Structure formats: C-alpha cells, structure tokens
Amino acid sequence: MKTNALKAAFPHTLPICVGFLFLGMSYGFLMRSKGFSFVYPMLMSLFIFAGSMEFVTVNLLLSAFHPLYAFFLALMVNARHIFYGISMLEKYKNTGWKKAYLIYGMCDETFTINCAVKPPAGVDRGWFLFFVTLLNQIYWVSGATLGALLGYVIRFDTTGIEFVMTALFLVMFMNQWEENRRHGPALTGLACSLGALLLFGAKAFILPAMALMILCLSLTRDRNISLKEKEEGRKP
Image (cartoon, rainbow, N blue to C red; front, side, top):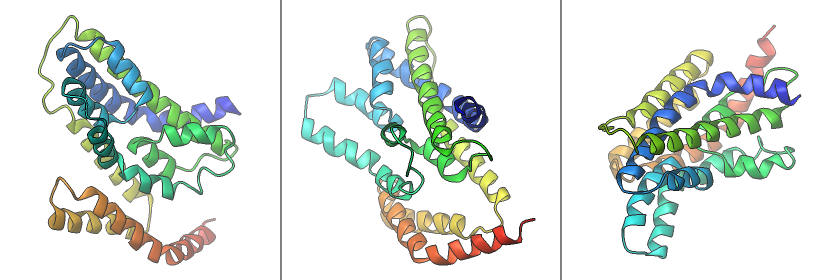
C-alpha cells in the first residue's frame, strides 16, 4: 500500500523537484554568502519550510532582534496558507496520524498537487497525500543544503533564478486547463487576481485576491459540484 502510493506520488512531484532544487540552492548560496554555516539553511528549510519566509529570514537574522515584527512579517508573508487550509479540510479528513504532518508540510506546490490530482484507483489517499508532501520537503531541504555546501567552494550570480517557480506554476496551470473541460474556476481565479492587482498593487494583492476567490467559489460551490457530477455521470 505504501509503495504503491509512493510510486503514484513521485511522478507528480518531479516538476517540483527541479524547481525546488534550483530555488533551494539559490537560498543556500545566499545564506552562505552572508556568512552562515550550511547548518542554518538545512535546519531552516527543515523546520520553517516556507520558501519566501526563509529568504526574508536572512535579513531578520542579520538585523536587530524584533520578535513582534518578525511574527507579523511571517504572518503577512504566509497568510495565504489560511485559505489553502480551509480548502483542504475535506481532503485531509480520515488521514489519521498523517494529518498533522500534512498540515505542517503544506506549501504552495504541495497544495497545488494535492488539490488537483486524484490518486489512482487502489492507492490509499492518505498515503498519496503524505508522500507528495514528504517528497517536496525532501527536495527543498536537499537543495538548500547542497547550495550552502557548494557555496563554500564556488561563487556565481543567481539573480533571476526565482523565476523558475513562476514558470512552474504557469506550466501546471496550463496542464490543468487542458485536462478540465470546465474553465470557470480557473477564470475566476485569474479575474480575482487581476482585479486585486489593479486595486491593491503588486505588493499587497495576494490576500485580497485569495479572499475574493474563496468568496466567489463558495457562492458558486453548489453549481460547480452539480456540473462536476453531471460530467462524471456522462463518462463511460
């Protein structure tokens, strides 16, 4: 059962592996360039496991200690996970002891896979979700640690490497678009994001956009479920 779940989860995480290794290595290089031992990025990627916040933490460690400021900064940077968590309540039901780790290890990329991908027939859903989460964290920790270790011996400019994840999300969005007949939820997300971007600007649009998405999708939830059931009923 566990082996089948691992085999089913692994192919879906390969694109994440490529992106996480590149981004993780850039993070490790950055930490090393600031004078930190490889132990710092290794442990931070293991216990914080929030890529954006880990990059921000570099400056926090080098500046004066302000715990309240750090708390609110972390909340603002990662508040989007509140919305992720709400949407995963049903998915994480009846997963037993794995639920605690699934909550802890849910990053943007893991959320995308676990939300969109349905485990194959005969594969335990809880173990499938678990291995997607675990593999993605292994990729990130490995990339961060390797980058820091390489930072001891080589130097190069990593400016622009963060675009890897933007490209990754674009490819995953296009894949979901092609696999689903109904594009209403995707178009809703695009419209909410564009509207929030225009109203609040690039630095503050994420939370309003997600709040608007949740509202719109909640209002149309019954209709979307009905359409999905009709589609599944027409399948041979």
